[in-house]
Image (cartoon, rainbow, N blue to C red; front, top):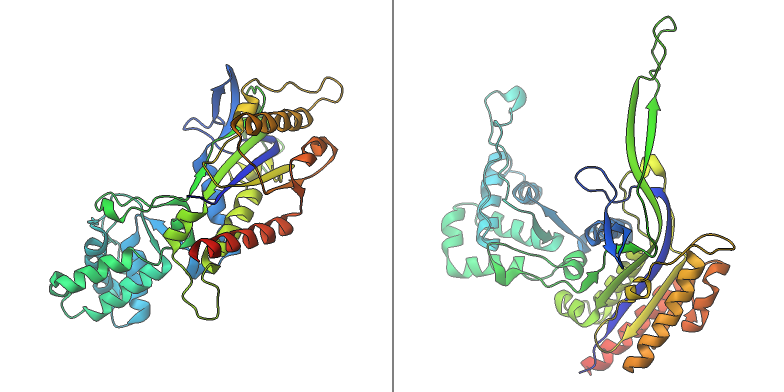
Length: 400
């Protein structure tokens, strides 16, 4: 059966930076092709993409992933029924979360928070043992259920129908970020959501050595008659790289996760098209924020290749298994990386008889000129409009 897979291939240069660091503060790296490469983990760029959604989507289309899920739900319960606040709302929320997801929240390991001027103490909000990911619509639905059963929540949720309603609310109307990146519910595996997006670790196309920056800070209040010297000294590690970034979006799985549009005035494919646009813009234009204030590494990709396939996705990272060398005439890696990528794409698709059609190219500068024959050249807005239209047409055709 024909599938709809969207691949995103990106070349992006990043100046001195520490975008994604390990537990020792060192920029993450990986050995590939026998040499050390700069690396930005897939988790870091997925997080950056999710944060970008806040400016691209209605809050109702997003979710909340937190261990403080009881507190978040408690606030929604109070918003719907102001008489249920404080400990009452938290008690209701904890019971509903346990019933809906199987997650038993526990009090945090700290003393109860002070109740302030009223005297006495109130309980700290229970926390789940792991991150719980629920959509805004799921949280609102669970809050309504809690208000309905507030008179005796335990007895209310022991009722088989009410228990099923709680489970159903938590497992339908998924948000865009849940539908794209998936969800794991450790205590109730059948509520897991398989991700529709796969993101590769970004790797430099060339060998990289981390460098160290020795820095000082001056004490603004130091008196002139005191000894000379800095008020603070330190070191921070960094590298710079031309990165190959990759992601694949399974549009069919995204449709299954999101469901079809229910508003009569909208197309049934609207949720999938909207999520696809948001993912493409968010993934292409986002940047993880590690050490961003120290380095200001706010670059955008020099080359973006978006390919639609009807079979399995294909990463082109092996184009750079042999590390790219700096151009002997001009320096830099981007020009050589583009030429290498063009040759690899053509060879792979010819050898395996796979088609990269349609394919769109967003590119900037003369160094990316060699990629022009790969597909139709577009701006970012043109790319989003065109891909959205193609996805809508393919899904409408498959539904028919």
